[in-house]
Length: 370
Image 1: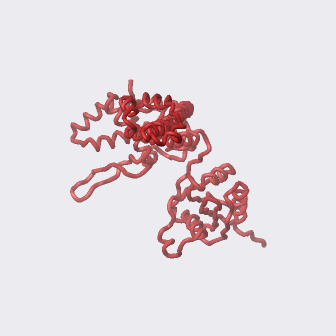
Image 2 (image 1 turned 90 degrees about the horizontal axis):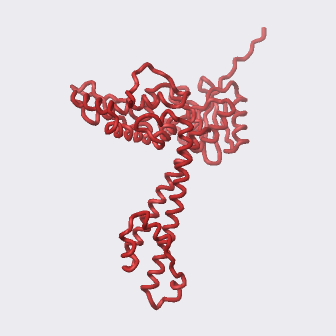
Image 3 (image 1 turned 90 degrees about the vertical axis):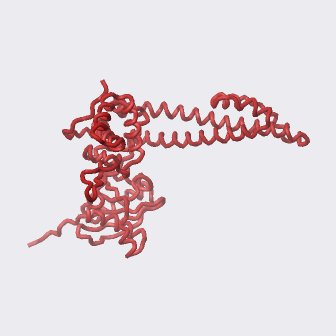
């Protein structure tokens, strides 16, 4: 009688780096099947996948840093039909006991599945939302640089010689920039008028102000272009979000980035609320029971977006204003009411995300504006 060997279930873990990825494979009993290092290139990703599958039937692959060093590997594995699970934090106890190396880190990533400590599906980063995220990051950097350029321009202008300063100090921000763009310093004076320090100082200050104004103008034009591109993409990706009271292009873009290109990874509106940091957390102790506090976890940018929507609705959305007055009369504090409103808004945002996450929970939605 011939018996066939049972199929080996392979659990893989990958420790990601800039130039190389280190992979480890274990079976469902926790026995190490092998470990190997692969280059962080497309051929390396294919070789890693073949090596994993050579040990047996591959289960969902565990990766570290799926949003940075492991982002390209995540896209390659997803495209190949492999389910990827994100591992956020390595086992600190094992690291202290056994030391640290790429092999040990990869093995601990793989073993996280045995303890059910790694269950999060990472963002796919392969669609329109990833484009929106990239453009928003670029715009954020440009806004910071533009602010820095104007602050430098203002500082140079304040310390300029009196004839030049008196002309510019009374101007408003954009008028000041446009005036500095029209400055025409005689650059030769910087070299030939060494005997006249004041004229040389004025010429040098004009040169600095014009350069800073040109820098500010270039950044401002780039930001305007990025704003138009982001607005078009957000309107195409989630038009229903923009119809909600208090939700504009900037806020809708942040919620799309929080959910990702594969928002179906968020299994319920409660999970989305926890991701946004607005899930109520118990804060009872001693005689104080039934009390909850504001959550400090989750995506803080999404939490900030919810707070902005909450403040707008508390000022301009009549159903929210009525709710606020009613709960205030019940003895609730303003902070507690804001937490409740943020939780309601998170539910409404989840219900209006792209169609793949319209998972109705049977809960009553927040009243909308007429």
